Image 1 (cartoon, rainbow, N blue to C red):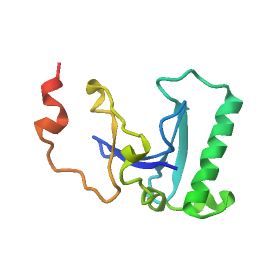
Image 2: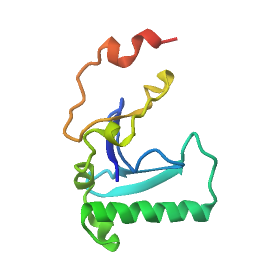
Image 3: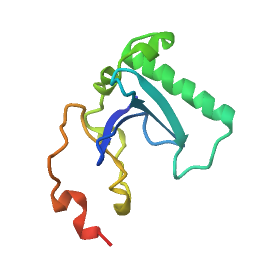
Length: 134
């Protein structure tokens, strides 16, 4: 399973579970930084799936995550967010995941970033896409 730790420009983190597919699944840390919540949505390039198919997809992803973490599905919710984030796939391109957001979406996009990486104090014009501003 590809596990991708991401952070957006506002400093919010997500951990995406699995590669690019019809459904995107991710977890977000709770305010206490230990607990987490599971989220999923239809991928922007896919057609919406029926509710039952979405539930089945969620179950498969969570069962795979439990196996990656080495716990039973019933106790997965007790695994801290940071432990899951530490499973970050170091080179997602090895498995075909190379997200390329639209230039206009950089302010809201989540970028692949290992969990230990600190946010730079100031962004350079090259990173922030200054040459693409409207």
